[in-house]
Amino acid sequence: MAEKWANEEDEIEEGIVRITRCQLRRIIREMNPDGTISAGEDEARHDLLATAEIQIDELIQYVRDEADRIGGGFRSPGIRREVFMLLAEKIHKAR
Image (cartoon, rainbow, N blue to C red; front, side, top):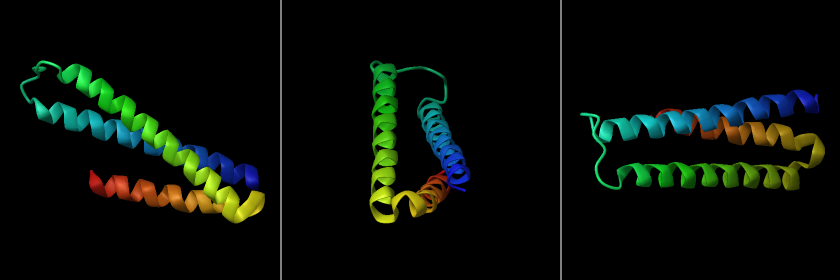
């Protein structure tokens, strides 16, 4: 059962990262609808993507650590799943 939760958790995490990257790409495309890149924009975009990825990874690790602390080995997969579903819902609404 724990393995099933772990697989679902991994799928949710991958979905969150995919949604976030997709959102960032869409926002960046809309900034310059004519396709041009202003001075420094490309580097700033790369910095934003790198920073966002680091923060997402940190959030995922925080959720894992706290879920383990709260629920131990048996309940933590369900707690993580709840948090990741909430995060996915928030990201989806922000789109």
